[in-house]
Image (cartoon, rainbow, N blue to C red):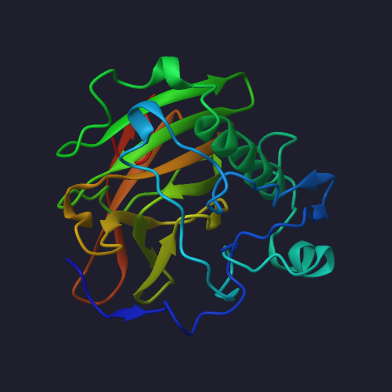
Amino acid sequence: MWCRTTDEDQRQRGTGRQTRQRTPRTAHGTHVCKTISRDGTHRHSGVLSGVVCPPPIRPPTSESFAIMPAQSAALRSSVIPAVPGPTRLRLPDLLHITDQDADDVLGGRYDHLLPAPGIPTRDRWFTRLHSNDELDVWLISWVPGLTTELHDHSGSLGAMTLLSGALHEYRWTGDQLRRRRLTAGDQAAFPLGWVHDVTWAPFGAGSSHVPTLSVHAYSPPLTAMSYYEITERDTLRRVRTELTDSPEGQ
């Protein structure tokens, strides 16, 4: 049951969203803004050529908690929590990892993992890019009409970098759902206890048949996810928990 959804696209501040910048910034020993391939300078070829297109140039924005502009290391460290987690990796580390792997996807490093006919346009698709005991990294596609349901990531931290297209995230704030829009080049971080649903979002004329692509990292690797519904009293009720080896509500 969806209820009391508010739109945060224009008015959230300081949330984990990162608008891509050309100049690398350093936080917690990581470079979170190393992007050369999502600003229109990279040539896309092969199966990604019809999916990944340069994002429009737009001024930085600021939104709430897990989305933020990369203006300074001081701002970043004050917005993204670096509290101890299940592994030695923290949210800034996961943002950095998804940023690097997004560039590697665009550079062709993972072409051997992509479906030969191209990314499906009617069904969600995903593939694991790499993993170890502390980390799992996935490339995920999103298509119109499919949702992940409201879910958490159990005991895993998460982060993502958007390669192409756009997504809507509906996040439970404690008493309502709030929506934010993520577009190509944006990043988002998901601390422990983050409950959300993610859906494909339109991003221009003729985009209804073009999947959105994003890179996700989880630490430790996902082993379980819980799913929720919103009650008539505007509270959150957990309806089931599932063991999983797949990302984002698959």
